[in-house]
Amino acid sequence: MSWQATILTLFPELFPGPLGASVLGRAAAEGLWALDTVNIRDFSDNKYGSVDDTPAGGGAGLVMRADILAAAIDSHPRNDRPILCLTPRGAPFSQIRARELAQGPGLIALCGRFEGIDERLFEARDVEEVSIGDFVLAGGEIPAMALVEACVRLIPGVLGSASSLGEESFEGGLLEYPQYTRPREFEGRAIPDVLLGGDHQKIAQWRREKRQEITRTRRPDLWERFSSDGPIRRGDNKEPK
Image 1 (spheres, rainbow, N blue to C red):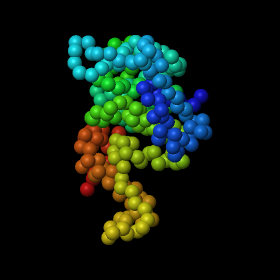
Image 2 (cartoon, rainbow, N blue to C red):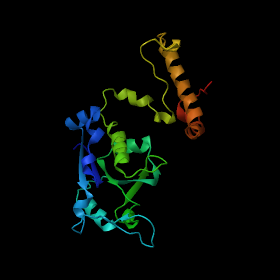
Image 3 (tube, rainbow, N blue to C red):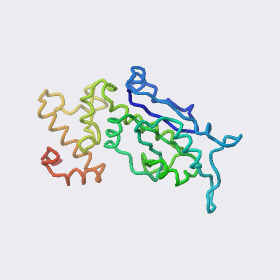
Image 4 (cartoon, rainbow, N blue to C red):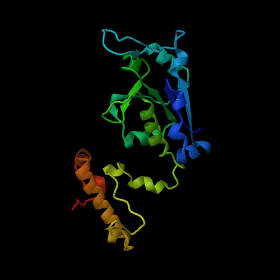
């Protein structure tokens, strides 16, 4: 059975969007993964199709109802897949979590809207709250696309070269090294000589040092975590110059 993503949304017409293009679209056509959507409005209990109501205790905006969302969730086979809700207050989504999800049967993504979701849903349906960054969007559809893409590209056979995954940003706790290609010189800027010399050991060392340098200067939080692991655990005892 292929990896399955189910999206619960008020706007199913937004999907597959970019998830149906390029390597992800080809992988879906080959049966490596599948995507379906559930329109939350189909479970409304009124003729207007509304799925929200005013917040208890007062306040601005509207809150999505737990009973309607629960009905939407229960309408689809879960098949041991986790339910993830895209929300700014969720735990930061990471490459580690993407890899865990990619190794499972798939996921169910709940896209919130309005002022939020009735808190009772999260406990009643064991919903995991995740965030793709410290900013706020109008809804969870774009974060859901990002989450699904992060997982699908890790499924064996989706990418043309699985070996490229090992040196990406966040793999091994570091950001990726700089990349270059033709032309050899661009507006007075040349490709570093070490990359053109053919010495693979020196190239590997240069790339390792650049990964460390970029991580240390751009993401001190990642660098601190990487450094605290120690050279034996990291398999690396070189410090950036």
